Length: 425
Image (cartoon, rainbow, N blue to C red; front, side, top):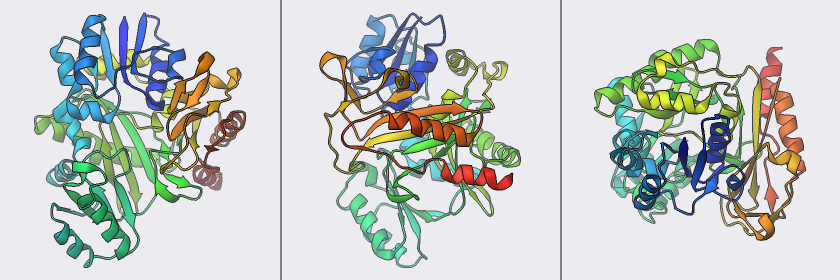
């Protein structure tokens, strides 16, 4: 089979490495891929958002199956375009991808169908939003309606922070039209859990739970990033909570999308907060999370291509999906200064024995096939072990063997989860 994966980050590298395990895969293309992915797939210099070029390549190269991984092309309707060209895909169509493409749509969906989430108000006028935040207790959460590279959310601890976030989104338009509407919602408290789920529009199969680390600094300090690391499984996500989420969140969401005429087929990401009043949805994503995909797929024992095709063909109920009982950790090595201004173009010293445990993100090929930094999040260094403590320790040991001049990483990925596990023992 000729398989095409659209995207070029660490998430896509994790998907590609897993797809390679299927012996039926003959040619594996990444559009555009990156310098690290080039070791596992043929990278084609076509941007994920160039829909015409992606479709043309797929048709011209007899692609049998496509995986559309990033949010932008999904929201733009790449799956619709590929399916119209006769190419089956893993990923939701444009109508279903609105669950991430518009946070206003997602919040209204939850409100309509009684899916537990934070109380909220929607604004399209700056002055009205400014007046509203003067009346509510702090902290509050300010969210851009549209896509914002994982950075369109501000947890404002003071009125001044809330006002500043609103002005940045609605007046300065730091994320363009994504800030034309904003959501102001109550700030929930409790452990955060990420649950990715395979769904074919009817059946829902949650993957193993995970915990992302969004803030750039140790102790969850500093600005939000695309993710500085992840662990799986999440110790706060008990079997009892998992059942509650299935009954009140997962199934109702998939059913709601079907009733709205937007059946969701692909990977539906549930960002959850385990509040004192029960699980609440913080956000939906219409694709695998990053870096959650790196740890979750590291623990997947079933064949990924088989599961994906079952999702596409509506046969998920008849397809076993198994995960290892072990634990996984991913430590992101970023360029210093991320998520602000950072240096790129630095040569990466990546020892061969460590490379097989690394997912490349912001990386390009340099002279002599060397790897060179080209993004804020550069590498995801992963490990799987019998215990979470061992997985975290091994991931950090591997990261210490990698060098580029501006390398930065948090030192406490998984620390809270390990402490929670060991407190139970």
